[in-house]
Amino acid sequence: MSLQKNGENDSLNIFVRLLFLIPIRKEIPLLKLGGKGITLRHETDSPFAEGNRKTDRISYQEIQKIRRGMKEWIDRIRDFYCIIQGFLAKIKVKRFSWHTELGTEDAALTAILVGLLWNLKGVTLMGLGHFMILTESPEIRVIPHYAGERFRTYLDLTLRFSLGQAIKTAILLIWNLRKGREKSWKSILFRA
Image 1 (tube, rainbow, N blue to C red):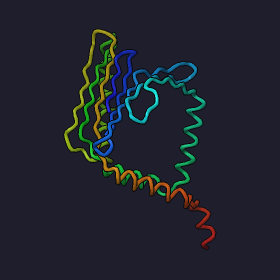
Image 2: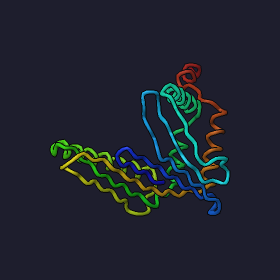
Image 3: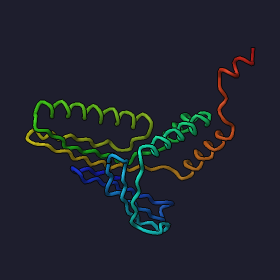
Image 4: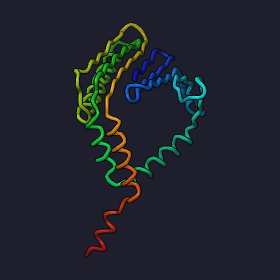
């Protein structure tokens, strides 16, 4: 997966290889935030896709509805975070490279923002190393531009995990979804 942002140009490239045989490539070249919502324009090179260019619009109300639905779904699954943490522990990060160029016209503000960005990248890397296996040392870089306004970022991330682990995690999530979530305060009251 690689993510690039250069001024107004956004690009998200996702490449997945299933069973080392079936390549699926998806490119999302434009992510536009507007007053009415988010516009996605993307292309795909997949043997399963019907067309290769598509434009989607997502309103802010739809985003809130999806977020509420996901929260309700997560609340119904018993031990959701333990299951996901167990899956994340099996993921190997083969490559992590994150380069950013940042600049404003004010040099002092640029220095403060660069320090905050280093902090953000450090915390992100710490969380990544805590939950996943880092096989190579990550490469992070922040380049300040004190003379003018500039924002460019490039993130290259390669993850490897077993398809069997993903299937096992999906089965565990479905199994615990059927059981539902018992409210702990109700079960404590009736045990007395």
